[in-house]
Length: 105
Image 1 (cartoon, rainbow, N blue to C red):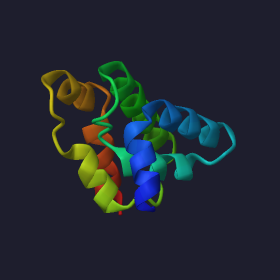
Image 2 (image 1 turned 90 degrees about the horizontal axis):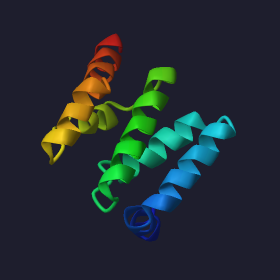
Image 3 (image 1 turned 135 degrees about the vertical axis):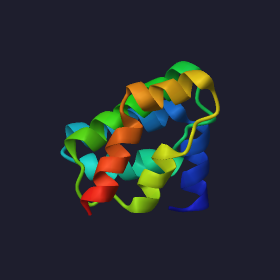
Image 4 (image 1 turned 120 degrees about the vertical axis):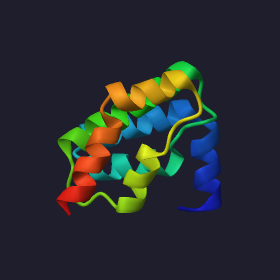
């Protein structure tokens, strides 16, 4: 991904939300996963946007667990910066999904 693309995703969480949703609706789930992981953990997004994007990523991983790079999964299990978001990692099952996929390979 180019530096310009990374900056766009980093500073435009609304665009990231729209594009990942559009990819998902057009059978581009793996592209949406890659796009979301490139911007994860969405630090420039508002708190509510971060929750929405993390939940979308978790749902995509649950439905498309194949061929996910281990480096992406390691990002997913790295503790997030607030207690609320760390709770989301656990209750949203991000941690469990990442571990399950990693050990399946």
